Length: 450
Image (cartoon, rainbow, N blue to C red; front, side, top):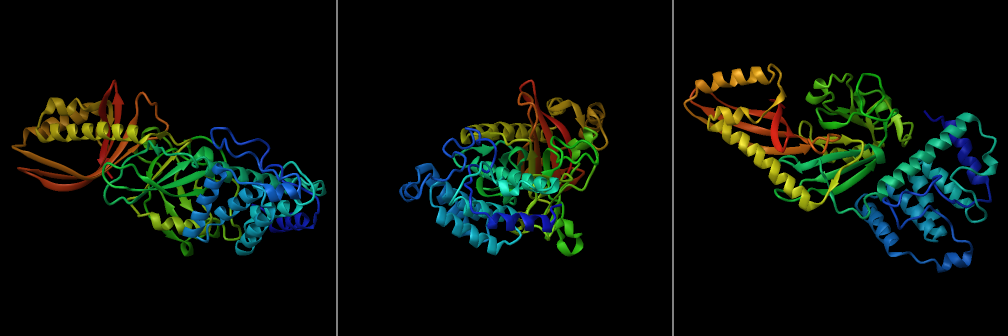
């Protein structure tokens, strides 16, 4: 955890200096596929150049989006930080400093904002190659150097994660169908330390991006596999409850949304551990470095409060992946049609009591709480033999593509309400299917209750 005294010393040092320019917030230029139009931050060479600096069209798009974010939510402190950086890059140093001064007054615990403001003040006179690298900070202790490094990592993660969506018109492959009662879905891109909020646009329409956040992830990279490995899991999860801050230790900030890790597939893979939550930040801090949790997904307290409006317990999915797989709207629609057709075929074969066709839709690797593939076949044949008729309807369907699976054998998770009527049993059930595509045909891999 960052010590208050160390940061106070660093910030005071920055404000006391009189000779630097921010050459970049990171040691290397953002990848071309992230933001080809935005180079690392650099100040104009002279005051005359500052006056003549013109904002390019792409930067204007970036600025307009940030202004829209701030209009929609004046408490969006990340947007203020990024706006200040953009104003600086486009030559408006005075405006950039003014933006950061307001931000640091409104969010006094936002340490990265203080550090950037200090460097912007110094940029009026001299040059440094990276944030927090003034020669007057050369006598820092190893702990102080580590804190600066963490702030630089946070700056890089925030900016690169945000820029990644500037030109994107694609949608996440994970969000194929959201049920009528599932208003929002959360998608986490671990490589970009970013959480995206998508709104359900209705039947036949791709979901719409409505919000995005910088998030902190596990201290170790990769997929979680065992308890205590400090990794954030990859998978399709659902929010299971809400824990208010008064019921939590200070570490969890303003609240928490636990998720259902380990899920059914995690259990199948013999993964261990628990307690994966979406939660806030220790109230003594504003934010944390990109890789600083024990496996949870962490937001600032202000942003946790903001994201709470999008979350419904037991309904909101949160898909976590190493990197988001983006697809076009056309491909999204094609995959939707294909998977929903397979789900309908499964339902129809069951309703028609076509035992052969029905069981052919189950993978040889099928499992449920009680049965493997062979046991399931024996059980269902016994059930079918006692039926004079079956009427099966499914509603409230959500279909989510599982991340990190071989694209040649993709897997989906389908949640729905099953309405069952027969001569000897009636009932409704909240059901979950995992379906996998094997040799070009969709098969049921898992079947159980939600």
